[in-house]
Image 1 (cartoon, rainbow, N blue to C red):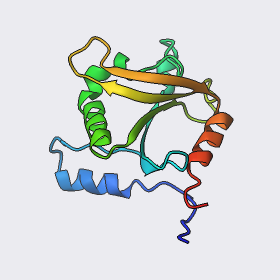
Image 2 (cartoon, rainbow, N blue to C red):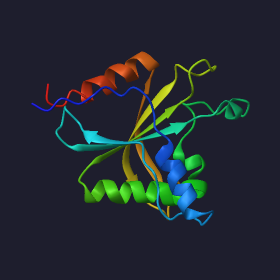
Image 3 (cartoon, helix red, strand yellow):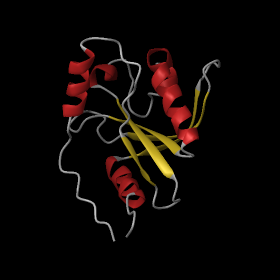
Image 4 (cartoon, rainbow, N blue to C red):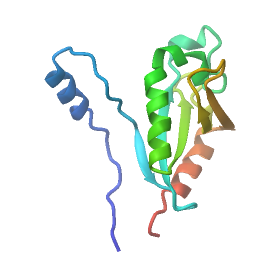
Length: 149
């Protein structure tokens, strides 16, 4: 049986490498955060993490209140491409709102199962939302990550 190694640290070197090679040219690609097989369904799962930054808190935007529809015009290509890719792979698309550890809203995690993304509507990103705390999200992630066990 294949045994994967634990995730010990992030590696931003690929992002730095691409920025260096593009030499300031606009990018027409997107980075996404995670793709894996969901151990519960056997389907591919694309997970995109959406940081709710501390600067947003003063405007009453928290992980529970933020939603891609609020800023779709800024990240339209990203959400449309993720949706299109998820359809081609027959994968589920999950968006995760979170804030950094040791911030006021560190314990607010919003898991958004994407139902549809349609550019020409008032609310282009349709989601089914589940509010969680950090521990509940950790348990969910660990449960779907049990591939091959």
